[in-house]
Structures are given as C-alpha cells and as structure tokens.
Length: 154
Image (tube, rainbow, N blue to C red):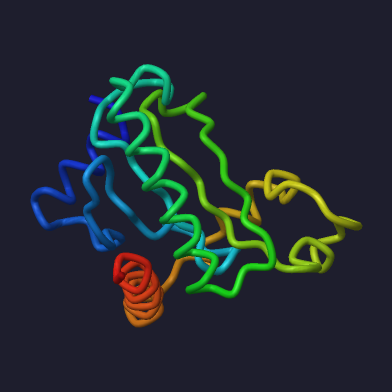
C-alpha cells in the first residue's frame, strides 16, 4: 500500500493528527513540517497517478475542490502567493502540495531572490524544528477549518 493510502487509512481510523477536513473527492491535511507556515496537502480519495486518470466528473470536482482548498490556505495564512504542485514522483497517488508564500521566505536561508520551495535544502525544509507541536498543530487546523467553512457559506 502506498504512503498516501496509509495516511488516508489513518484518517478513516481517526488516527491522523494532521487531518483537517474531508471533502467529496479528497482529504485536507496540514503538512508534517511547517517551514512554510500553513503548508497543506490535499489527498485524492481515489488512488490514481494523475488528475486526468480520474473519471471526468470526478476530475472536475477534484480540481474545483483543490482550488478552493488553495484559496482557504491563502486566506488562513495570509499568503502573498500560492505555490500549488502535484508531484508524485515518490508517492504515485494524486496529491497536491499547497504552499502559502511570502516575500523573502527564502532569503534568510542564503538563497537570494525568489524561487520555488524546493530550492530550500531538504535538511532545512524537513528539520525537526519545523514540526508543529500539538498546540501549534491545533491552531493551524482551526485556522484552515474556519477558512474552508467561510468559503462554503453562500
């Protein structure tokens, strides 16, 4: 079983502390590491490699939900710009990385100018100090849940 499927099983068994909300086509979770404050993932409920592998109506709904989650992340964490990526080279299960970005968020790491999050060395991005404690995690989840709910209201 793939890593994403395992994480979804933990959500279904109420054992994933990063879980925020279930949507029709996927699950919203806070990222394990928070170098980029508010980093979130949107995990497809369907185990496919690419968005185009979904049934057309599901694909349309999934992309709409991903865009809504991205907007909620932007609102909740005051992003100046969102970086949205579906990579899947390591975990070939459709999932989206949603990074809220702010000016200069790479500059203090010896990286000049603007660039993708992946310019940050992995040992910094995934450093133990970037993992939220229980209180921080609850605050992140609450902020994102509130933003998601505000977007669903007419």
